[in-house]
Amino acid sequence: MKRVFEHEIPNGAKLYFGESASKKRHIESVASSVLTARGFSEIVTPIFTYERFSTAMSPIRISDAANNELFLRYDSTEDAVRIIRKRLKDSGKKWFYIQPVFSFPTNECYQIGVEILESDELATCLLLSTEIFEKLNLTPTVQLSNIQIPRIICKLLDLDISLFENGEIGKILSLNLTWLNRLALLKDANDLNEVVALVPNELKAPLEALANLSSSVKCHAVFAPLYYSKMHYYESLFFRFLSGNSVLCSGGSYEIDGQNATGFAIFTDELLKG
Image (cartoon, rainbow, N blue to C red):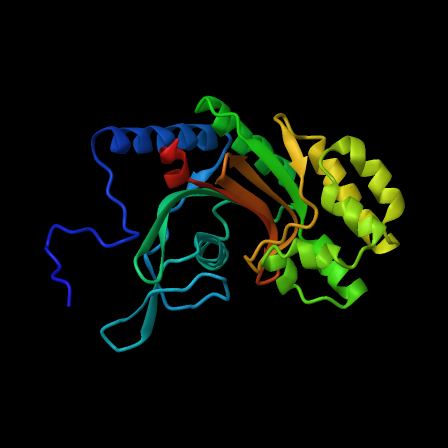
């Protein structure tokens, strides 16, 4: 067995010091200033939760004093929405948090998250995240998707959603359908109208919703209509900010316990790599 020294840091855990700590604090301060000015209230949720949410992440399990099963917080969105609805329902609809999430075995990920309850206007989240990036002097590309599109395609063609979850686009395109191939190649708004004319009727409305969202974008945008998020609560419009091979931010429209909302998360550790 390998000897572990008390000063060693577990793989996946985070240490910030000197310049990295200063940069992290600056990122968080800029985001906090923007969100507070836009009328958002801050929330810091407990690091422990009794409820296991149905997410793609693997939680870290522990027990409380009565031997009840606990989990370290591994998804801030579901935790925050349920706490706000059940404990803070008269305290507003616009919230943000700056905190880490944890997943098995020792992964720690810092996020700046935003949730807008009782909202389906994802454009607001796009504009907010763009404003934060601008104040940080960053110009990432935004990728726009609609989670409904892969789900509808699976129903139309009797495919398993895992093909989209795992990004197995080659298998999907091997069906050699013209409209599906054009969807995969769709990049910008100029192509969108042509593609809408080709796809089955069930896909026209989700694609038009994608076009409407793109009209509010104030930075370079690309379409990824076949992208599918593994986070189960995202139901329709979805976006990611990309820089090189890094995902700096993601967000979308979702429903939790019957509550419609929109939100996004900026991944602080990815920004610190730049």
